[in-house]
Length: 177
Image 1 (cartoon, one colour):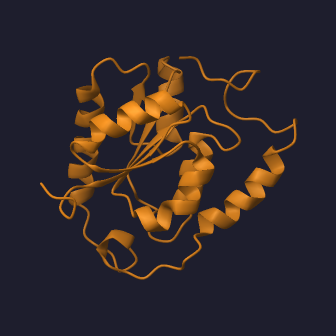
Image 2 (cartoon, rainbow, N blue to C red):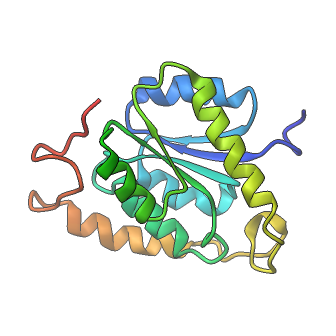
């Protein structure tokens, strides 16, 4: 399958080794746009035009939940399917991510990449059933060069740059796993 017909995936993972491995494995099946931070992904979202998002939850200064919220605030990305990658494995935590807008949760470490691929495929099939809209960026509409998410990101980064900034993780800001 050539790159013109493969699904486009934005992968955001702050652990460089994990980002590289996932990019290689997922790149065999999808066009992967890998970013080491939510900040990078938010600035590039309009050029990536993803069909699905795979977001690490425990990142700083913008975590995966905040990243998803900002992407969904960008015109054309309100309904984009998203997978939460997380070390938080309890049912209450999984439910929290689903309640915050993710369609699926995959717990790290991932020992079998097919688990993640199966989840992505399920989401892509579900998204394909949704009829195209005139503002959907993957269906040829023009978008502004600077996304709404990038503007929100500038404000968010300024707020979280101080030591008082925080995220959803534990007290030292790191996610388990």
